[in-house]
Image 1 (cartoon, rainbow, N blue to C red):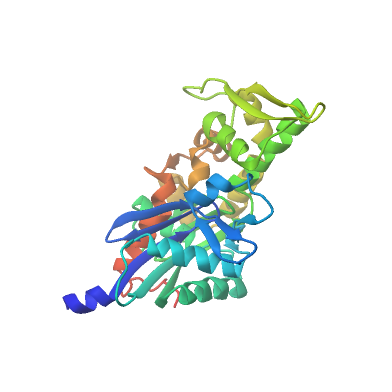
Image 2: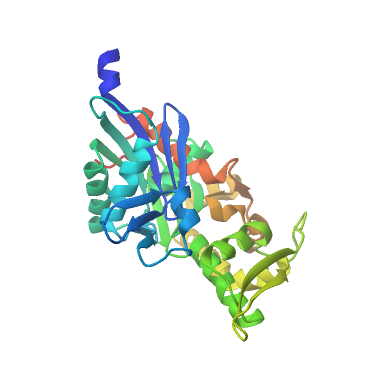
Length: 340
């Protein structure tokens, strides 16, 4: 049996718009930004993940950085395939005589179309996947948070990722009702870029806006442990000269307000179509938040005020979906909701 184990590698992939995580042997072995740097002259991949992210926004004409996923789905098929293949190589940096046969479970947004689903499957198969299963992100998040998804109890999971926000009510090992909106972390970043341009006449790049979101991002003004003001550098639109400004969490909370309101609307719309018995369960259990977007300061408090329900943030929200995908990988035969 050991010989066959050597030839087969079981991996779980959280293929995200912002970050890709790979779980192997119950451990997160790869946690890299979902970005690829391509050499325009040769068409070959120069770098993947963190290395490519360092180049993002700083490239010359011969190098182009590509984010292969947009709004939770594959936008550039070839770049996605290269990215998956290179990240799988990071699991075992040493060369093998025979490349292992890969058994994969990959998570996908719940609002994905059949064509987009096919693109994910094809990319995985071209990258070496012999046996590919797909799992919906809110289901994976629920499993990763520690919810028993197969019980006859209703649980609401809100997974705010980079490209999509997935809102789903889960019961009996299935998604009863859901809403997948293409408004999430990337929209927060672009809101901050727009705000800097409009309010301060300063042009900041995507990476700088991401830093602002992480350091002083907030969903409301009234938060516990407010962060100190954050200095950011960019190009002055009037003079063209680089300059520094200081931003506060209150300013960023105003900038993100409209986008967060759209996520609130989607949660309320999902609650409206939830069957009454499951609504009763959700009243008791509350709403579970996962994904990088749930780390936004005060978001749980804001959603709790809006819905009048308890809101729980997952223990490690960035890895909740990956953890759930890893558990699904070990229970492929027992989980009927996996898509072949």
